[in-house]
Length: 287
Image (cartoon, rainbow, N blue to C red; front, top):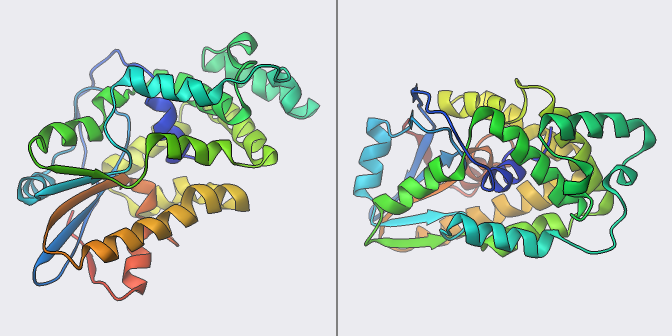
């Protein structure tokens, strides 16, 4: 599976939406606190179809009580996000996209591009990692997912007038992909093509696990990232460690923080939640 939470979130941030299913979601929420500090850890999905109600009573209470919001990257309008993506993704003189995978994988790539509504002409001028994200975004159209309907814009609106911080920059996130070795980028590309051909994979699988707050299912969606050491280290292991350290430092200051990151970072081995517990903090699930 493609990098479910990092790639999917960035890719679907570029996609659109059309229908409005009514869906009640119960995403996971954790809390870590001491005498004068409370930090809620909320697992997000970065793009949603319209009409998804994810603000359970517990989540709504945490949002209302918090004085600070921390998200993965600072809020940005879609046009600015797209321009930032294009600036790093495009590169003149690249070999054709089909030639970047093995002969045996070329039919898979062709079928995946077709399923995602993409053509070789669309992808030839993109770096390999960017082509993978573009295929993922195209496949996301089948589920009508859009970053405009995602969790982060709602949270940004709810925290208007309060402090809003970010763990990373948008450019920094994109450069994580840009620095991946060529073999890892090709793996992302082929897996994106595979996922695009199966409606039960990719976004649909992630959304179902997230909406149910199912930790085991969420962990299963992110586990394939670790199969490639470079991908797992860059997109999961190192980031989770950095974010856990940020939370530990923030616990030294009084206040109430609502921290919202991709749900895949909060579940399973090596997750932020596990790392915090290993560092002696009591983290309890409240939703």
